[in-house]
Image (tube, rainbow, N blue to C red; front, side, top):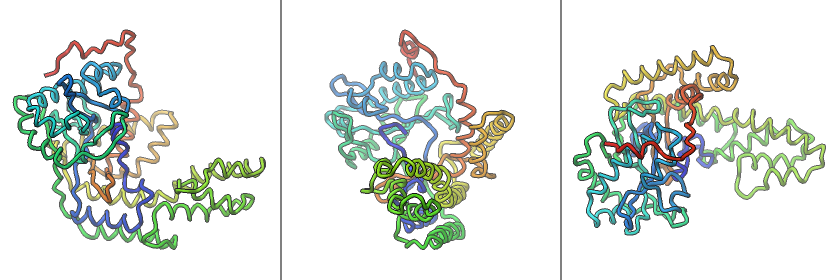
Length: 413
């Protein structure tokens, strides 16, 4: 996602979820009680309309919003040192500019607001300029979450209104007229299919086993559970005062309203402070991952099982594409094993068990729970980490001393 969208968390990344929430999510996905949307392996932009100059404006970050958005020149210049990304964005810009330009003024204002302050997140996929998954065509997909109303300072004010997105859906057929290479898509829920109840029950039982071992109520958050586990483990460090250990156990998981790690360390003498720093490093790098890994593994296994029954709506032959991705993954694994780059070996040791025998037929799903967006990605995420580590490791940016983007001289179709 762009910096404007923020990071969409995996379920296991939100420490404010309760154990009860984890099971509600597992059951909701398994029994098709949630609206889910396919997560696509593309590039993201925010788009709106500049009514003063009557042209498309786009943004990747808050500064772009403050500056009034990027036009074709600005977008091309921004990515001029990365020709592949530049070509992808400029091609999509031209398609959107043409398609939205056909709409009447009244329809545009109902979609983007009278001042163009309502911005829509879109995903751009192009098989000629693909990331990891090769889709069957060039698509610009308006995202499932609501558009955002931004202020002139680049800060979000609120979500857009339902009527903004409803008017967009009405406009999509007009936008696709005479577009040829590209297809504009409105957000549409993916048709989930129920999975075997034994998969759901096994995941929920595993969640309960973790909670019971920690003697934690079902309504407690993962953050509270993690803090209690850290506090218990820190008893191995008797030279650290108990009050400091208790504070650090909360501070390390960023509980609200607790003293910072720095302030707790400042309260100690030099010798105890050094001792405490070593404790903190061990707790952060070794113990904290050990506490959270079992929860991540449960969600990962469930997600992989769920996604194994699903096929992307943007891939014609999912099994063929899954096989192609698996072959690319295997080749990258072999390159890492035959190499001597330690960070690659460390990555492989972490990701390989998560892939297992999994096959990727889609990146994953995005869904909303308690007004938060979450994603599940199954085997794609670890596979993609390995592929990207090799595919993009030696990719160099082009030095362009004159700051003249090449795509300015090429009009996309």
